Every structure is written in C-alpha cells, then in structure tokens.
Image (cartoon, rainbow, N blue to C red; front, side):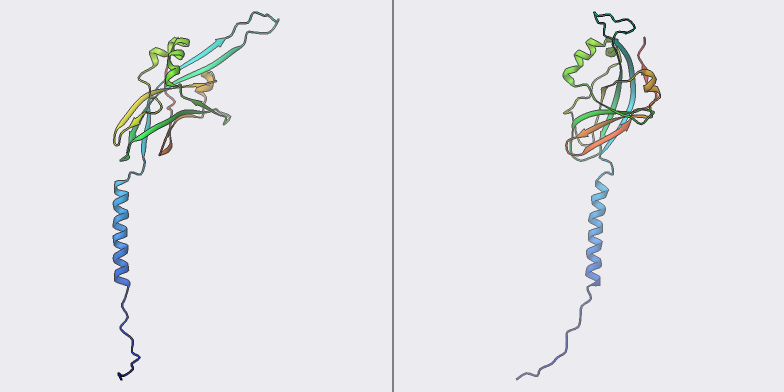
Length: 193
C-alpha cells in the first residue's frame, strides 16, 4: 500500500492571469470608445429668417366698442445642419421647436409638414422668398454624411415677444437615437414689410 501523505500542491497565483484579463478588457473597451463618437449627431442652425403676421378676421356683426378678432403668428424659418457621427444611418422621425418666453412659459410648435407647405405659402406669400430647400420628416442621413434643410415653425406670438424671448430651440427626434436639440440664434433675417 502506498504511503499516505497530506502534503498539498504548491498554490498557483492568479494575479498574473487576472491582470492579463483586465488588460485585454481595457484594450477592448478602449477600441470600442475610440471608434464610437461621443456625440451621435452634430446640429447647428446657420441661418434664421422670420416673418411676423397679424391676421384680422372681419365679422359681419358689429358691436359697439368691439374690434374684429385678430391673431398674431410668428413664422421662424430655421436652416438646420445635421452631421451623422455614427456608423449607421439616421432616420428623422419628427421636428419640433420650443420658445421660452421671458416669464418662462414654454411654447412648442411642430414643424410644417411636407403636404402643408403649398398651403402655407399660399396663405402667407412673403414666406416663399425666405424659404430654401426644406428638411422633411423621414429623411435618411447616411453614416458620416451631412444633411441640411429649412424647417418652418409657427409660434402664436408677436415680434416683440420673439425679440424678448429667453431662448428658442429646434429638436430633431430620430427613430433609433432619440432626440437632439440646438438653439436658434438671436440674430435672424426679418422679412421685408
């Protein structure tokens, strides 16, 4: 019968394999972040044109001391530039704008739809010379590519309220990447009277 021994084998240190595994993991994470941009989309608004409108709705009934109802609408034509930093295409879902008034009231406007543009130009002919190539919903922006187009936003304010605003922004909502916003600059090209 063999002799019984209670000696234990020499214990291996797992420090070296653990450090090697951590180094490989750090390299993989580093490569991932090196090739993945910090920002998926770069947005800017290089040009802005505005058109204040005041529409009076005449009525056939006349009441003493009462004026015809009127409505102020302020059209903002913002040219939005988009750069896709990702390695996959972007698909534009929705376009909105937000105006923050001096009393912190937020007004949100959805951009004019493609099918509504002819009617808007017909109702407000002064918008047509201010407009450029529109940016439509459902636009696809290829990886590394740029897209630029005009969006028309309509806010129920007058010129004075627009000039005194705290801020205004355009928000683009993409199908798989979420929402991205950029400020509308204070300087704009007003429509000639």
